[in-house]
Amino acid sequence: MTHQKRDPEPKGLVCPNCGCRHFYVVYTRPRAEKILRRKECRYCGRRVTTTEKVVGAE
Ligand SMILES: [Zn+2]
Image 1: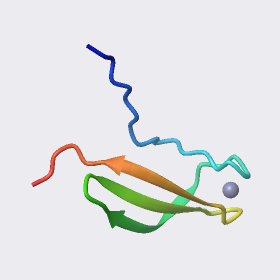
Image 2: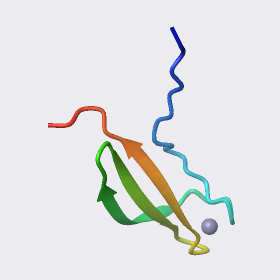
Image 3: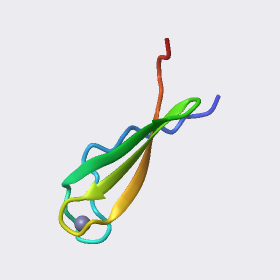
């Protein structure tokens, strides 16, 4: 048995550039088993991409 590392969507995503936590979602792109999210910092405009795993698909 192996311990599965949990990597939930970081609620408090911190901007690597200015350190703020205010992002807005530029777009959301569903993939096969995960969701890609492009976010942009409100203050400095830094863009980050996050992935979100789909737990229960219909
Ligand atoms: Zn920023």
